[in-house]
Amino acid sequence: MAFDFTGNGFKPFEKKLWLSSPTMHGEEIEYVEEAYRTNWMSTVGQNINEVEKITCEKIGCKYAVALSAGTAALHLAMKLAGQELYGQSEANKGALEGRHVFASDMTFDATVNPICYEGGIPVFIDTEPDTWNMDPVALDKAFEIYPNVKLVVMAHLYGTPGKIDELKTVCNKHGAIIVEDAAESLGALYKGVQTGTFGKYNCISFNGNKIITGSAGGMLLTDSKEAADKVRKWSTQARENAPWYQHEEIGFNYRMSNVIAGVIRGQYLYLEEHIARKKAIYERYREGLKNLPVSMNPYDAKNSEPNFWLSCLIIDSDAMCEQVRSETKPLYIPEKGKSCHTEILDAIASINAEGRPIWKPMHMQPIYRMNPFITKTGSGRAMTNAYIEGTVVDVGMDIFNRGLCLPSDNKMTAEQQEVIIDVIKACFE
Image 1 (cartoon, rainbow, N blue to C red):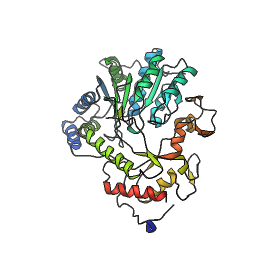
Image 2 (cartoon, helix red, strand yellow):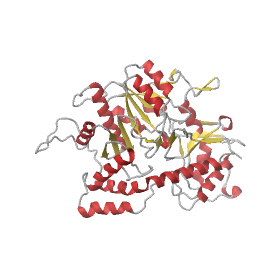
Image 3 (tube, one colour):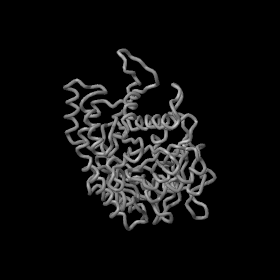
Image 4 (cartoon, rainbow, N blue to C red):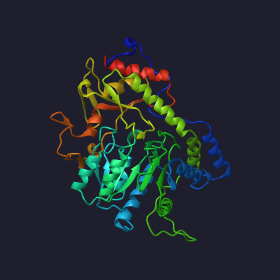
């Protein structure tokens, strides 16, 4: 450690301060008990109906299909897009079999894995530094290299909308369908419009760490009744409309539980409150850390309003101490006046608080390391590191090397956050 508690006056929190844990209010249990009292404990019931209705009203889509997870929604979105683009697949063949699909590089692998579920080949598009999302210039370059691609999967990192207009312009130019992964950005706005409405098929998540939660669950969002009906069918094992169990295509057990839907129903009442708390956390960090050689995760204040799901910081290049990382372990050398994300995360952990590294870019994950990776200058696979003659050519890896996610739990008090800020300051002393 770069410091100890005694010398710097820090004491561990008695109760762990989490990165982003569920915040419950009371109404949730009432809807769960309603499911219990009425005996609707399966994948049908009033809670599911109401949550789908509320989601459509909140986000502005015509149809919402409640599923077991955001990953399930992304999987069925891949199946929808693949069948639309390439026709009905054989029963045991993925809808994207052998096809390249462009995908965000800096994201959780749940954005990307569903491409593979349907037999597709992810092609990773580098990140732009203004919002830490898919780079429209790199996307356009990717279409030059892979002109036959017709599907783009884009995520909004840590609740911050990407450059949606520019990305849509590129996709429209090349006749490509967008699947929008808004799992982290529920409630975020781009030009006054909710994320989760900009693709043909869109997905949100209610995982336990999200802005609101059901402990699990997700939704597929669309304006197509035909698509929504297909997803409802596929998610209930693709049962046909017959008096017996008739199956003519592969299905999945992906429907949301009425119990989980009850939790989400109660949580929706507090979506705006949660966003306001998250924004206050972000602003306190930005103010408290303004004199350090760091900056917060950026967003386009003119065109977007994030949901501020996670507050992150990135350390200035010239303020980084030496560090190296293997596939699973980091090593750094403390240096006066400098720090690195590992040192800061160690310091935060030492006072019983949780931070996390930035998502490791998909093109550097062992499972996807042989997949194509496209930067704004072309193929990025020839690059040996994030810098060539002082110019950043792999933006995602540069952010990963210098960035970290800070404790962002909306139950964190201002006093607790000040302790986190002081600990970060101590790392640069």
